[in-house]
Length: 364
Image (cartoon, rainbow, N blue to C red):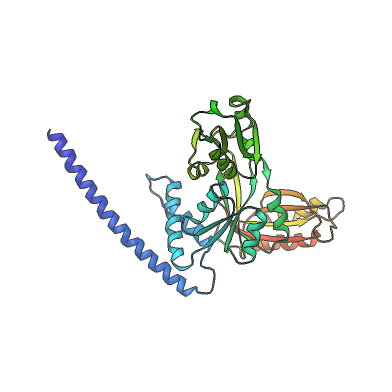
């Protein structure tokens, strides 16, 4: 009895300490918001959202984290704090490749928090146009999946659009089987995007070999269709299951447990140096022997590390004097002297070079 009484007294004391800490955190959050408000007033007329500054804050907080909360949780908390503070000054308008309930929506929320206004667009072209026209401040589009490869339409539009890359998001893709039905044995049809069907090919062959698979425009559309048909299922993310009130019959059914999609954040500007950056550009190689070697030599000469090289048909760009263009990612910011010299030397070795932007490297 005495032990129970002591434990109850300790529990009461701990709760009182938590209440006091909550009061102190609220005071500090209000003070932080006031400081952010003052910064907004000083920067009036310029971009209030600075991806490099947010990257620096998140990096510093993650490094200083003493635990027991994991780094991922700390980043989510501080992302929401910064998102809420920014919304006091400039509520952001975010366009993303939709519809609602897709992985791109999840990537947009991971990058910007929950405070902005998010608008889905049916095509990647529409996302580009929304940002180019000023109807959205930023756009989020997929550019590559670790299993299925590059998203060609995004690359084609980067070639001609005036927009810059100001950020990137990596999102682990967990596919889920969902339906109004109570079990997978009741399913007579399965909807999903073609890429998701491919990412779950082996699992479906083992578990639902006789259920017809119907490709649709998006996983969100698949979930919507499944919500209309009691015996239909869909493969999509958890957000779609919540949105359309579907039962998750099997979780994480992707064949590759490390399945990840890489998204780009687009804007009228790129980012200033954050201390851990990436620069993307697209170029052509002259039509002569050794052209690709000559293209990459300046990177070696100036000690610049290349993290990606993606070739793509030029598709009639300009006068089509070259058959292919190359999308290249390098480590570092374009304002760094070695990067600037390497890019200048590359311009002399290629038929065409367009800088797509410098931006903070994603943390995950």
